[in-house]
Image 1 (cartoon, one colour):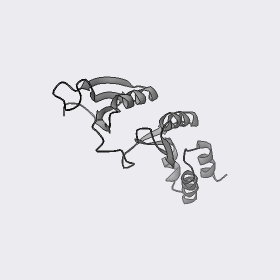
Image 2: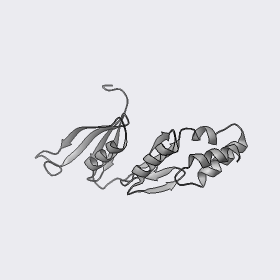
Image 3: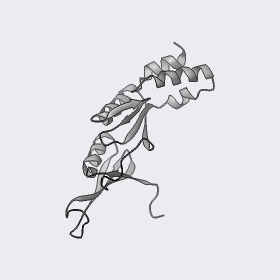
Image 4: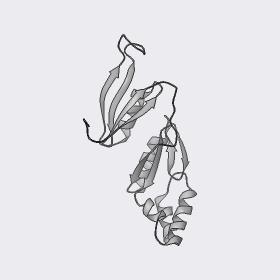
Length: 159
């Protein structure tokens, strides 16, 4: 294999460059890479963007202007584990702008890409070996759209 790791290809309908710039404006350790444009041979208009390479939070992506044939679904999502409420609010607010909150920490951004913006300790809470703790944390999570870490921790503790 020529390169280590994977590059995630995201299919857009004419918004590849805009989306790449949007994502690199949100995540630290991000940068824009090569932009490939159609030449005279097409199939798109000469000079228009075919792909945009970028890194967001150190993860490699390529945004492809593939056309209207395919759209994003919740079958694929990106998880962002946040250390505190301030970080969770930052990502939630930036990614949901122009999009919508869904449930349980999930949102769809303005391009239709699904994200899970969740506390770093959530998985441990909802999978706690003590069933009552796991149940309380899970029920609290299921009642929320954007997750509230203090409320989750309070439910988990039985307060």
